[in-house]
Length: 248
Length: 247
Image 1 (cartoon, one colour):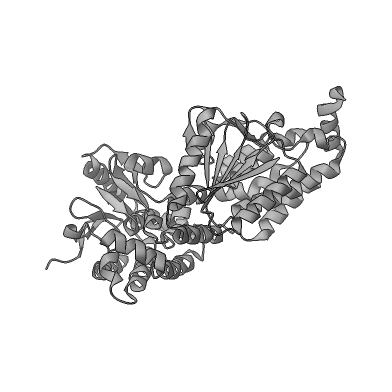
Image 2 (tube, chains in turn green, orange):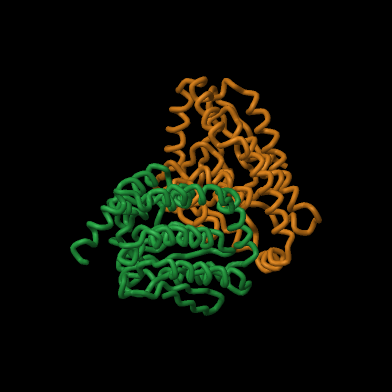
């Protein structure tokens, strides 16, 4: 479900579950974290490109897998938090190619990247309050990346925004017209970054991570705790049940 | 030799000029010393409401004069430390600082822009932080840029290097006003005119509050940035890259 391809000092980590719109399971997130760590340890890697097969970058958690089992939902949140931290702390720049949509957990991954490419109509947001779940796990990276007003609107309102709007507000850094062009644009940016003096780039990223407290576990752990506390509540169970109830 | 920095006062409006046009106002130790001196004088002039910050000639500022510093041991570190202290001093000025950014503001020059309260540029101006392209780390400007345009945008700008045009700088929020080419001086005059006529105490107290919101440790971060940046400039990667660039 996760594929790694390394070419010319660029490590591509690919979400490879297109039939499920790359919906995230705990195993998939753990594999992602392990792959990111392995690339981080390889000094020849100068840029990480996080991308996905199929028309949608990532639809979020695989809720079908979690419908009857809130332990799976807990594991998804814990694994997501670990993946976000590991991506954020990656030694060299991380570029995310988010075509089509980056929703909930998928949007959390997007928020951990340094550069983000999306198409104008991509669907972006954190609609999990609709199932009685708090998206707080994404709050630390969003607060580091964009203005507070947009963070509030996105984490509290289950509605989605377009790639175009996310670009206006800085959550997406590079906008293209068509979903098919996202990966090529991201690859170009990755090549641009990988071509720069590696020590200067890595030192600059480390300094930015220091300035925004990326290396500090406390805000991430606290945010994860808030999300975990909403799992398995009556409202969460009943909303999940009604989501899947008529489909058995 | 003419003075490297000029300070003129006209009623409630001051103008501070980087005056090294033959070197596109590149920040040498001597120019920085002159700017420190003039900034110190300005800090003692509470009757002045605002200060235009300008570069003489075609460019606002081409950045740090690394070329001159590279041959002298310790000189890059002194240069970076001086720039760091100047940005702190600039930020703490009681006057509203208005950068008139024409032609080019690169690296340390664009750092001065980030620390001014209000920046104005024109569409085709070249701005940005190409430090990483030279193997250098823009660690001094980073705390200011994060404060100015937000951590996400600062991340993208500083890691990507290169330069952007004035329109892009305006879109990112690095400058507050964008004019067509050729209309810059008029726009700046209008802004400093408004500031000159406004309440001096109100401006000063508002700026003081905004500076408090920068956070207590921003000056410490900027100084720490100068140390990091000096380490990187002194490393083999930067030396090789700079030798290539400067021939």
